[in-house]
Image (cartoon, each protein chain N blue to C red):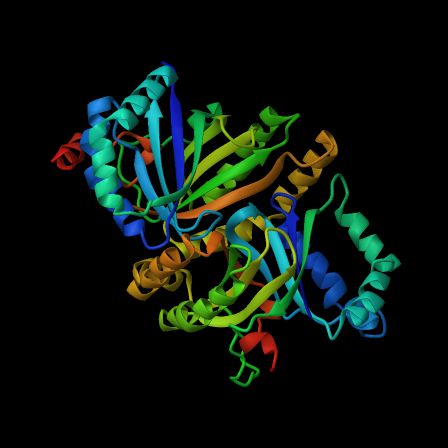
Length: 247
Length: 241
């Protein structure tokens, strides 16, 4: 089965993040359901990065044509216009939108959680990692062989690994991590960047490929929204919660 | 005059860059002095690496110059120093350690209250760089807003204002940069949430919209920084009035 993920990053109008949470977590669910937009896999907010205050959520699709049909119908629904205008009260809640369509990277398989799906709390991290344009396959391999195992050993849980399919800055790896807390991440990053074995690998990569395999990385620290906390392997949210949101 | 330099560093290599800077800025090289000391380049008021932000890894530092004449009489001479070239060539093997350099000129903003005398305290924790890109022509009222509303509010929420600068040379101007220190990440996150709900800020934004038809900030960029321990800044970056 084809599998696509949609990453939606919203720069929120200052002062409206609380209202946007309410819209996304509680008001919009019946309208999404009416048009076949399935319940998002997770929702977050973030205050560190390019589009702060940031609101972010992810969707999963099996058919992109169906995705465009569903969103088209949703946006054309007069009930959505009514709901939006009522909660906007004269001011848009979102100032800027960045959308990306992703495909799961094959290397994600190597980091899937074997247990039953469960919510993963703590501090989440979204990395939009630029890759070497001539060697993107080798770049992903390096992530799987070097970076992700090291971060995992230092306390990260790997929630998802994707390649950008449509959007800005391809080739781009999109990585979603979970950390128990900020301090664990700080010492992990420090350890990672002081690791002489990793630095040696980086030197070999540069010499072999005529430059580094990874470029600049847009990094967001995300706080999971309690009405839809990401689950292991970004599994769908459970039915019982869906029922709650359909009220 | 303040020079704010920040570097986009090659992946995984930001600590190498911290060490490379240490090798020329702090480590004694000749006659017990560092190269920066020898060439008359001031020690940074602060150095940082980025925790999160738009283009990581990132290393940045802030310099204060008496004048640009002083700056141009010293810094470019250092760039020709053979010891520095040897250090740089070693670390650039296979590809440059620093991939892109931003070099901005800043001046203290009138919103920056420096009346509190600076002392020898060193301010660690987590630092935050807030870049406010403004509508052209509205730096004045926005400066007033920062001074009267936003900066005092950040203090109430646990932040310490390190410095506030107008960007004199840089991209996407007009722009104001504020550097805020927080005791820890959790305090910062809680403060941001509270700030977003603060009614007085909301009233101000609504007033701007009535008066000018739009908000005065076009874009806002937030970067969380971890201060490099050897260069923890003093209050107000140690800059007196």
